[in-house]
Length: 487
Image (cartoon, rainbow, N blue to C red; front, side):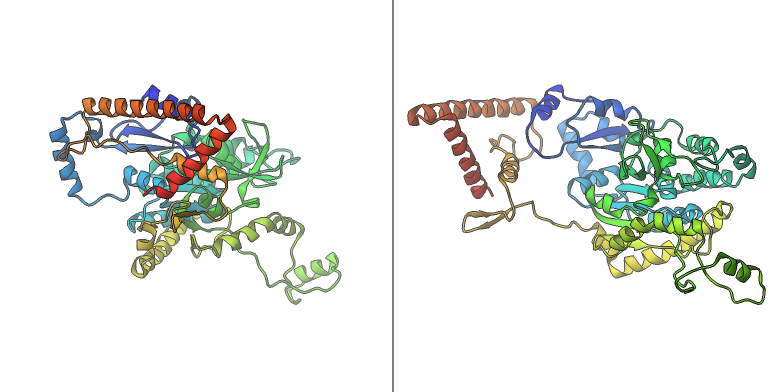
């Protein structure tokens, strides 16, 4: 892997507030990413990273004429919107498409079918997030980037979840939970082994509920199987997972954010496709008045001639209380403009019916095909893939005066820092690339320009007798004038 130590030192010492991203190139016929954390730990200035699978031509040295000839042939072909380079372009231009998978137990198997339909519809995915079962399915998809392989692995895990014998062996004295969690840990670890979140092909995150700090946790790095397991830890069934980083107790993310489309939006996604598979609560309950007798309920239950009543038991009440915050967040997401909400017809399936994997996945596939066909004919897909052409933070000029609503001086400094110095046009018209000699000439010219500016600034300060504070104020005004006159 080629890297420039000089460039990295410059980026690390740069005070520019712009985000810096690390792009790691991999041979398309090589092994999957691994050891990414070592690259990140040595570069504290990196805000995020991307893995790109590259064809052989990227790593092949060619002369400039041969290079131009090769890419002329490449540009004659239509671009592949599913390639890693296309994903990089969408991420850098603010046009990323995110996929968010909600929690819902065995109903989450339908997400496998929806992802198959999504792939067939030609809709790319640049970011994946999930909660509970959605965290598992999302991780499988980002690791394989292939719905066929994902389906096989998801089915194997679902069938293992139907084993009564393994559940029986994992039973424990129910102080914290019914099960010790060892068997469930083993099943998740067998799927992902020692995989790290940083090594996934597509950027990924999942959600957990931190009951130590009473807060939502967003996990974008670390041990994949542990944070997937933590995001699937239902209260009463599994004990909380102790975060290996700080020891905090982590529970199912569905208690606080079961469909984290807002998190994906905060990470830069232009459009979020959200697949909801949560259970729907019964709202038509019996009005029993101001008081309730348990003996009366017992009589209603065992008397075959009595009218049936719908009254919540203690466990159901506690479950609804736990998901109150999640329900409010879900309604906010569904009404947002950036979110495309999908809910397959899976309400008839129970939370633990993993044995019906194929049936539930087929329901998701058929529903996904219908939805994406409607999107294609109504222009929704075209709108997703279209460049939003959004202007920079502030580029409006009026009468040669900068118009920046709600802008501060730090915002102005950020904008000024993005203005690149004018470079001499040393490149020949018939070539789009600079030779080594031309790059040295440009560097020398820029160094001379910086040196002359440096001496000029000191000379001006000596002539006017200005203090350092006055000189700094003058530099700020020059930055504003430069911004106003910038094309």
